[in-house]
Length: 305
Image 1: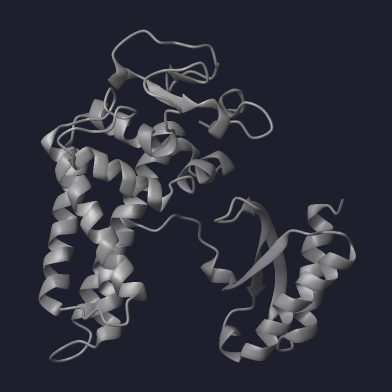
Image 2: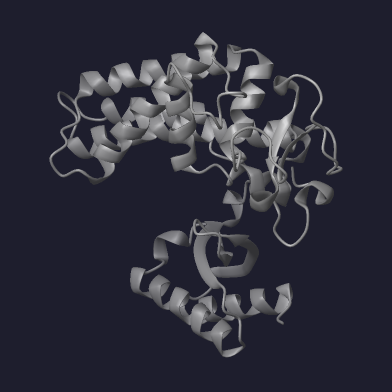
């Protein structure tokens, strides 16, 4: 198996051969899982300052193809995703929800008069992504800790939020009678209900804005959605800690059957052992679906959650 240094060198050599002379400084990669939970390699081609403007589109395509082919010759089957960054841009950090909302505000005010549909649609999408990333960060902060934001386990939990699961739990949170699987744990406070209602609405609008050719976004609706998103995020942050914890837990771990079964138990979020702990009120515990959580060993013991 190729080691990290060999893989990075291959990517650098391919990039150097295809891109403008003197533009490539280095290549770095991290292994990860893609949206389909398949192993992939995320490459960053590090460019010299001021050279990104000189990168030709065809050359960038040939670089991506070349990295894939050269790694394939050495039996590296993971797909390489390539991005570019000048040296001064190598700053880590997840998307900030407030910045996404600010982006939506700029988009609806970007042109005098009525904004273009492309800008309005992008604003509608940005509103949804603001709440999505806020919840992804809240879950990772809760289960991994803010002190571990630079670790792979933080990324693991952050990226573990599935849009479909988010919609499902938000639907249950707004139902007068939640399903039997979630009912014993689901918070029912007004702040979580208000947040869940907003997420469901933003998710549907985002889907229309991204994919429906007949959808016509309106500036007034985008403006109200921005304000609604700010209010929804405030409601979530102001909800009782116990309700937020249970809500975030259900987003990542789903009961296999009604109630607690042999492979589904509750464990303390501060604990690293996997002994069943069914005592105490549900709001004090984190639900763990072992089949879903286990990937090559118990992640609880490895400190992933």
